[in-house]
Amino acid sequence: MGYGANCDDCGRECHPFPALLAQFQEDFFRTHPIGGHLSNFGYDEGDTVTLCGDCTYELLNPDSDA
Image (tube, rainbow, N blue to C red; front, side, top):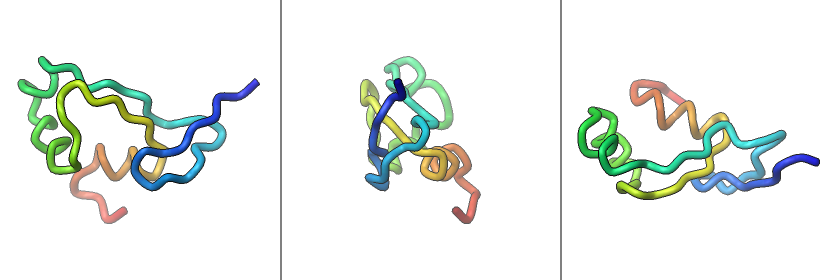
């Protein structure tokens, strides 16, 4: 039985499964340089996120043209 989810960013179904399931912990969000980048995408400490592969790539590669 597969896991079904929709991407929180683009809304498409994540197939066959999400590329990223995460909760942004306060310590990580406040101390790691990517915290500011995540904030620019509208995320905050404590948020949970489900993302498809394309949206994960865009989020984790700030210099990408995706």
